[in-house]
Length: 447
Image (cartoon, rainbow, N blue to C red; front, side, top):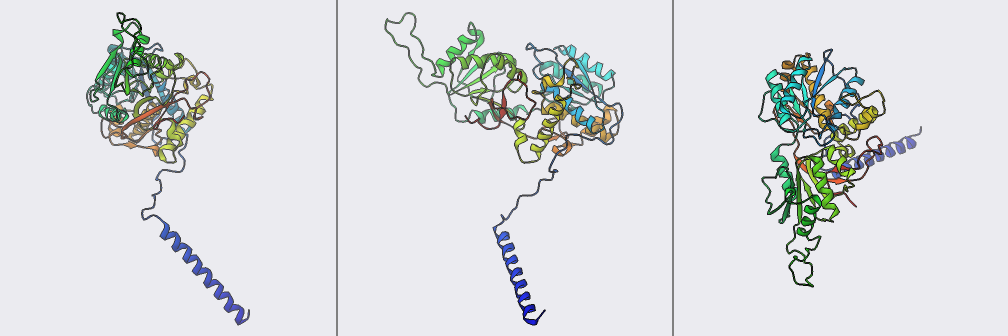
């Protein structure tokens, strides 16, 4: 190579270095001062879950209220099929998790007997999937027997050392309800024996017991919201025109003692063309509500508002750790539904029949107990409970829902938020023409 050629080569190389430096500087200057930190959770969350150190013959008890006809406490039975999904995921990873099921028969005495029976079967902990007094009785009995207990859908009657709830707190739920009703000053309560929110100012109320039926109540509610005219009184002069109320209600809070009765009220209000938001503070997220509303030909629309912890199927669409955790859970749901050998909790039907309802809270309760037993390296309930008190979990440990911190009795770290009903099929669960079309999303469903 001649001296001239060598010189030209060096000049070209120098120019290339300068250009590269300029590009790098431009990129650096254009970068935000605080670049997003990488997500510490792996890019994918595996469907199969491993549990190194889990003892052999490990089992978890599940206490539920059997029934499909609106029995109090049975509203989350189908949601609790998430426990089956968790057991299947650990089985795929080589860890055998047996689920022992007992029916509390819908009574406090039945709940106590169910927990005692499970303790006699050698379970290392229990998941109480019921609600109401029987769920609290089950939790208290588990505490007395030294069994760690997790309540995904209820709060215990009092804090206990080895009892946890993963449901949103009452204070969090009421705060979310206030957000859902933000800007509404003329709220109407429509009630069928349900709980009445204590922190919400409700100037007017209609109780089902004061009407012949739900349609009669709904007609009066529609008049109060200005969606129907009030007919003239029977003794009004001939030719008197119907009137519209002044200052009509701008939102309706709907409450009922069971999700099935809540669905009946909602469908009746919809049949009378009530157009204001229908805010459902309790029971609406239970599968029993979706089933009942579908059977009554009610409509799942953004008009229906409830409150729940952040999570649910739409979370799987997020590009973050929780989204990947939920996506892995839903993949496991599809796998379990596609296997005819996988049965539901009670073993009397294929899991696929309930795949549409299996949820994250029941799944995550099983994951937590398995992780605690693996850390303890023991089936001893007292050691499992002691280990669980030191632990917190997120998507990296296999959770599908929000992070749980078991160093405190209320383990859920996420706050409740307003959620809106939608009939949109997200395509994340197995196709099932018999499943109700209702999904809850954390923002109003677009039309």
